[in-house]
Length: 395
Ligand SMILES: [Fe+2]
Image (tube, rainbow, N blue to C red):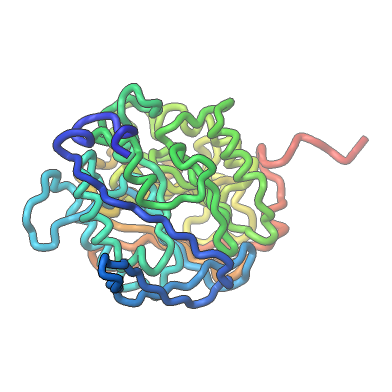
């Protein structure tokens, strides 16, 4: 593990022996069934020490029609519950988010933390603090990651951005401590199915542009889902590849990571991605269904029938300070709701035709923004601009 981490502090003052990190696989579980488990360790004298008992519900099978509740956020980090100071005391908002999720864990089925996970940034003990903070959640429901700049970026190591944000970790602790069903865990992009959902998780810290291996993966993930069985198609990534009216993008004359939207919006449109969610910007913003910066639907909170575009959401306010992510004074037309506060997103699929989206503030767990999608499978087949091949049955 040490050899692959390439910089300081991860290889110097931030390093400590990580001990053994185990990954256990539970095979042939029945879908949607309640299991209990405990973790044990055999001592030299042959006796065992056991953890408390935990329980979890196994995932629904792909296409299963049942209530499914998904939590999504980015940029959470950890905080000091006793108020003592942290070397990088930047994510005290994470304590409220964690508390709300623990309080509601009976009503959560799976969590996606889409990059900027612990903000350990090369100080390995900070990962222990983070995993301890999320243990009541991660021991109960799948805790899925996407890779962010604070996990991966380091000059000269193949990251798309050559900055020092990972503190020399280069993605190694994140990809070792958490399991992702990626073909190559170092690359960190993967597809995962949860009941009526297909999630395509991209890695913005590796090149995504047309012609790259990651672009091929994204297209394959989006195109290979049977929407009749899994109608809800969700794209997740850390940096904003879609739309954000954060000041630091708009001051540069843009509303996204350069080469994000221009590379990927054709795929989102062609394969009818319902919602694309991003972190990195520490606030909340929700767009209309949009394509090429034009709203494809006028409604704000209820979409019946085809969206004709993708709804883009920034949900990077889970814990890291919002103070570096102010909104620009101008609110673009595609931006429907902006919140400069800590919060997270919950998706609830009631069945194959009804999806509820909610944005909750971390301070009180209440809903401050929401919309519903209500549609029939035929609505997903419907053509709109660039979503169907330019072909005709006439000859
Ligand atoms: Fe980030």
